[in-house]
Structures are given as C-alpha cells and as structure tokens.
Length: 208
Image (tube, rainbow, N blue to C red; front, side):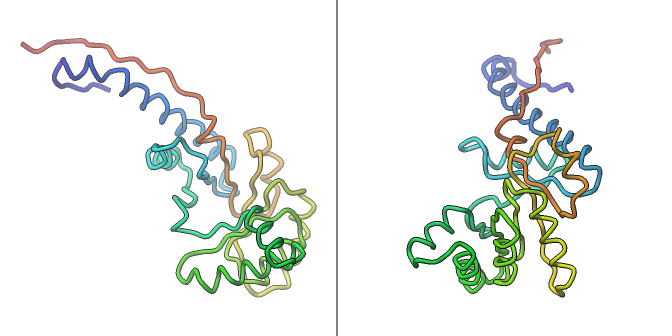
C-alpha cells in the first residue's frame, strides 16, 4: 500500500508502526489458516492469552483473519475453569462433579444476561455442567471418547448446548477434530504464538 505524510513522523515512527503491522498481520494470517482448515465444520475462536495492553488489537486481528472473539474480559462472559472448581471443592468439601454442578448453578443465578461456560475434562463433568444449566461446555485437553459419550447423551435431551473443544489445538490436530460433533474450537496459539510477518517501508518520493 502507499501512504503519505510528514517526513519527520515517518522516520521517527517507522519501526513502531512496522512492529504493530508485522505482529497483527501474523495473527490474522495464522487465524486464516485455521479457518481454512476448519472448512466450515466449526468456528475458530481466540482466547484471552494475549499480550498485555494489546488485547483489543490482537482480537481485532483475529476477526480480520476470519476468526471469532472469545470473551474480552471477566465482564462479558462467565468461564468456570479448573481453579474455580478446585477452590469450590476445597471450600465446601465437595466432589468434583458436585462442585461443577453447584458452581455452575450459582453462576447462572447471578449472571442474568451473560452466558456461562464451563471447562470440563470428561463426560461426567460435562453432564454435571449441562444439568446445572451451562450455556457452553468446553472440553479442555479431554479424550475424544469422553466427548463422544456426551454427544450421545445429548441426543435424548431437549435442551441444546454449545460444545467447544480446546487444549493444545494446532493446525495438524484439526484434521482429527473435524470429525467431531462440536460447534467451535478455541485456539490460544493464534494470539500467543503467531509468527510475525516481514514488512518494510520505502520512501519513494518527497514532495517539495
């Protein structure tokens, strides 16, 4: 592309501008690769694993690449993760499945108009989250057989739930994931490990 402006500003801001362009273009490009590989079977979401102070820019780059944004912060969606569940287990002396049910139920009561997502490892945990009213269930680093058990369970249920797959998702693992009955994958590496592209700026003319 061609841009024009004061020479002094170009020379002083060149490196910073190129650094942003390289980094964000790398995120968009890697996201696009994932979206193409997904081939419409499921949506590709980012995570909150972003560079401090650059989250909005990096998440915008994901959208440019055809991906979708997961929650921006702690305010726009409830995501119940393993540490939340562990803390609930210890505080109330509960087993894991019971803790998942209770913490999900409590979150649903308080969340009102925002969705509640629960991170699970297996079928039993997913079932507990579902029965407590979770809107989204994330299978994180879970065995595929556990996800298939949950898919089978859902066939007899009237309520629908969004199924997300996460945990060390990469380009090579997408082929295996494409055969699963899921709605989306969340991929941390599209923001935290995207390689920068190489850009340069050349002054071609100076207006007098």
